[in-house]
Amino acid sequence: MPVLKGDLEKGESSSHSTDGHIDNDILQAAIFALTAFFRGGGKVGKRAVEHSYSAVLAALLLQLGSCHGLASSGQQEPLRALLIAFQAFCECVGDLEMGKILARDGEQKENEKWINLIGDLAVCISLKRPKEVPAICLILSKSLNQPQQFQREAAAAAVSEFVRYSDGFDSLLEELVEALCWHVSDDSPTVRRLCLKGLVQIPSIHVHHYTTEVLGVILALLDDSDESVQLTAVSCSLMVLESSPNDAVEPILFNLSVRLRNLQICMNPKIRANAFAAFGALSKYGVGAQHEAFLEQVHATMPRLVLHLHDDDLIVRQACRNTLKSITLTMEVEGMLTLFNAHCFNSDHRSDYEDFVRDLTRQCIQNLAPRIDTYLASIIQAYDAPWPVIQANAIYFSSCMLCLSDDQRISALYYAQLFGTVLAKMSQSPDAIVRATCSSAMCLLLKSTNSLSWRTARLDRLDLIRKGHDSEASK
Image 1 (cartoon, rainbow, N blue to C red):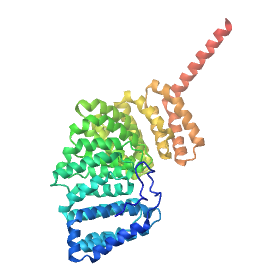
Image 2 (cartoon, rainbow, N blue to C red):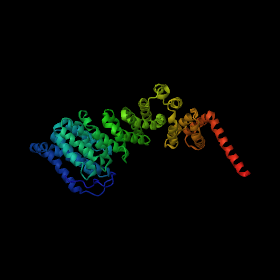
Image 3 (cartoon, helix red, strand yellow):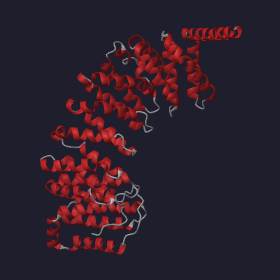
Image 4 (cartoon, rainbow, N blue to C red):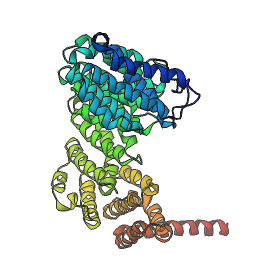
């Protein structure tokens, strides 16, 4: 079957708009000839197709990728013709279940849907014809080197599912893992995330043998430029960390925690939620020689977890609740676990959240006084967060911390800055939740003993400045 020249090649734009033209007459002729052969070849033709089953099936899958690429740019006929040929192939070899999948989803044009279609076909083949899987996989794993983008995506979609059914084929699994690891740097984001998806579907009996390689891939793809790849990487990190041995995680614990922290402020709520949850899963590895280094990461993350306990998205809130419970064991602070069993911690009401923040602040001041300075510096950075609710949370949390602390040095450092920010946002913020929270924060600040101390300190400094000026004038 001829190569579809409309398929993007490596180095070209990664968008799925196809450039150039194909010779439709040659393509259509090849597809029609295949269809006629599948339908009219008789017993001899059927034996020939059965004999070359793996090669024919792999070719059809690859062309299915190319034809979907053309369909996404408005060229529908190649896809329709290929689906007819594919159905004829299924009838010829008696793969009726695969024919049903094609009839149901064959003309889906959205990227994720046709990728899922190929994955479903791979699963069907694995269950109905397991003996064909090794030969098909070898062809498709080599096809990951194809210059045509949509064919590489089709190959990755199939191989990532075949990995699940490679148990019993040790040498095949090793080749598939090597191919998937090699192509996680592909130009196509779809290929990159599908390769990672395949790596985390290694049969459980073999997974520990490849954990180090898989974690290395995850670590690299957490920094990917494409959001869909980042989401896949952070979701897979959560899966892999559930069962990874300590010796595989410890060497990358610090780098992994830093990259997960970076994703906790992503605009995509699914990425945020998974990044918080994966950080919580890391806590069980923060022991032994890694304890102190990981503990610093925990303290750097704790204020953000508190701020996102009342995130706009429910999945983020729940992830933060679970992670706070996990990291508290690492922090070894008595009294905090009791807070996490309280109604206000598990409530989604704003007033309950503010009650929790006040109670948590008291615990922090009592047990983590040396950390208050760095906590406040971290919270203040969230004053300009892209989410109004997080801005409000930061204002309230920092106000509580400043008002409840009796450390005059902290007051001197932050009171003026916080007071000015609250005053400005109360009058200028377009968001009601920010203005309302600023009003509450202002009441806290004005009522606090630190308010008097701060004003006294300011007056003392002004008095010293005035006396200095008077002294200079009298000379």
